Length: 364
Ligand code: 1CP
Image (cartoon, helix red, strand yellow):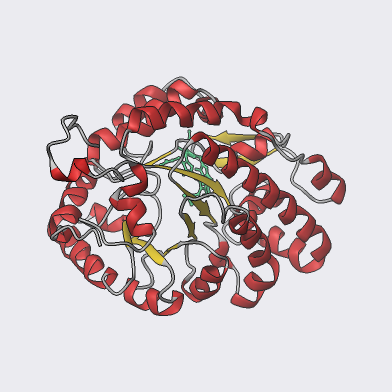
């Protein structure tokens, strides 16, 4: 965030300053950066005591629908760690609930759906959403953009496969067996469901973009459960439709999944500007698979943050080094922050990434 209002500091003189010219957005666009930008998936909530305090008596879905709470929780990690981007506090099931699906987010479990999807009739009852269905998100984004100044806000949504998994399984699943059974056994029903979820996701991301977010991330957390051939046939067309629907929106699109080493090249084809990489694939190898036309995001193993500091430092150095092979690198974890993480370690990682990657600013 810039505090200089005199215009006498050279960098603040730049008329392009603002979130669109931040290190985070520049790295997403594969432009030169003054330092490697860093943020953490699931940085809001999870490990922060100030988050636990604010959530003590408020249910998860209710907190997502209260713009005052969303704003405060989203800002907490920015204040504490000095990360290069904020991510909206919400959940991937928020737009699905707005579309009429009866679900709850159960503490310690995750999303639980009252009547898991089995029929076309149920799919048709999941209605498309408009801004009015998620006006609280529109309002929260506007409040946040005003508060954040030059720090970019990332909007997000769940991708069709990951959302479908919760709707078909009825809750979190290790194998995604019911989802795959539906996909293989009733491909028409599968495509109807994934197509409807793609529509909802696109509308939800559009609301966030219209309200002012500087980038969006499509979370396909569980896509790594699929073979490349099945991903290509059952998932890629739907995720690609979401990403193509945002091509003219003017903000970078990030596409992320876990265990996607074998899918990285195909996920790149889906059309995002940045591909998220988990800790299993080194960033130089990932870049070889994804190609020179996309930036990468990642990929510190969240468990490393539980190790002694010298281990963390060595891993941060390795990842920055391997990230140099990419045409743009946003430092992040390979998946979300674990609740038991010491927040002070996150703050130290941000400072270390900035220190190690700072070089002469080349704005060419
Ligand atoms: O930084 C942030 O924390 C931003 C807010 C955020 C995001 C980006 C939350 C709050 N959820 C998400 C995305 C999300 N939700 C994903 C994609 C990212 C990922 O893979 O981690 C997924 C798969 C979910 C589904 C979900 N919601 C789970 C996972 C369950 C499973 O299948 O293992 C869980 C536990 C939730 C609940 C949830 N979402 C967010 C919070 C803070 C919580 C916990 C709430 C509570 O228990 O009270």
